[in-house]
Amino acid sequence: MPGVHIGIVAASAEGAALCYRTICIEGAALMGAHDHPEVSMHTHSLAEYMKCIYRDDWAAVGSLMLSSANKLAAIGAQFLVCPDNTIHQALPHVLPRSPLPWLHIADVVAAEAMVRGLRRIGLTGTRYLVESEVYPQKLSARGLEYVRPEPDEREEINRIIFEELVYGVFKPEAVAYFQRVIDRLKTQGCDAVVLGCTEIPLIMNDANSPLPTLDSTRLLARAALLRSVRDTAAPA
Image (cartoon, rainbow, N blue to C red; front, side, top):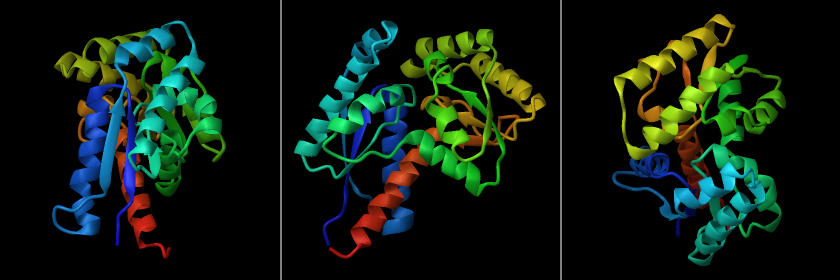
């Protein structure tokens, strides 16, 4: 039986690589030794995305995403994931013209929060993501509360992401800063924290976080893997 072909619309390399690796490595547990779905990825330069983001042009961000979607559809992908939280702000510009369906990263995270019985979620990610409605909309739709970091915390986290994490630079000082922010979110009644930039799980996890983590990168990869296995098993 032919398997399902997953398309990854990538923006930043480190987060996309983690998503790809998770699909491939964890596929074995569901599909058998060394097995995983067919996976293809397309990546425009992160610089091209950032030019659009800096001028707050989310329609242009959506055009880049749609370009990737069309290329992936042309080589046989059957559904799409985007392991980049920030550019999910552009999905409203993409979905009406998309050749394929998408899994929404915040939907996946919110669903996991419900499964775990969580109630109040701290948000971390780029400044653009944390100040957007990407997560608030999906969390609120399920009756979940959320807390954003303070403005100065958003700026420093944003700096760490764009000056360090996207380049594969992981510093103890960055870990310590995230721990302080997450600890403060804990004092505000949060019972978990979204690692809402796909690079954050490269330095933060349940072992070093003051709160349980919702790892958006791996959760999206696992949702794609489960959908692929389900669709492969479905009768034609």
